Image (cartoon, rainbow, N blue to C red; front, side, top):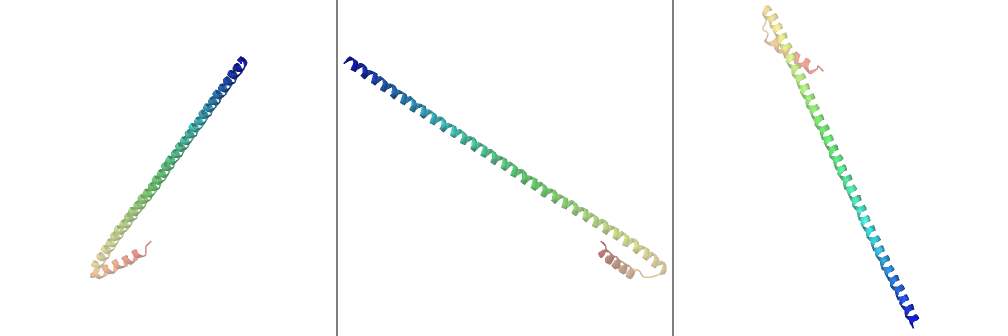
Length: 139
């Protein structure tokens, strides 16, 4: 009976040790799963952070390109305005030069005609008309 009692205690101890080992194994498995879950969560957060950073850079690049395009547009507009002002200035100078030449030519004709005793009004109008046609055909 003592041997039976000792064998029974030994089996009970072995059974308790097996159960304790199973509990430890289950605890290790739970710990491993928790570590995997945390690692997966960390990787997903890193991925989201990278994607957000990429989107920020894309926005920065897009904004920079829009700013460059706007600058090009403004520069072209300023260049057009400068060319327009220069063209207007050239036309004004040409007009002043032509008027000066017409006036000088008219003065010469009036002086020549007054020496001859002619009425110069009609000749002046004809001469101005000729200058107008000349201007229409100059480049």
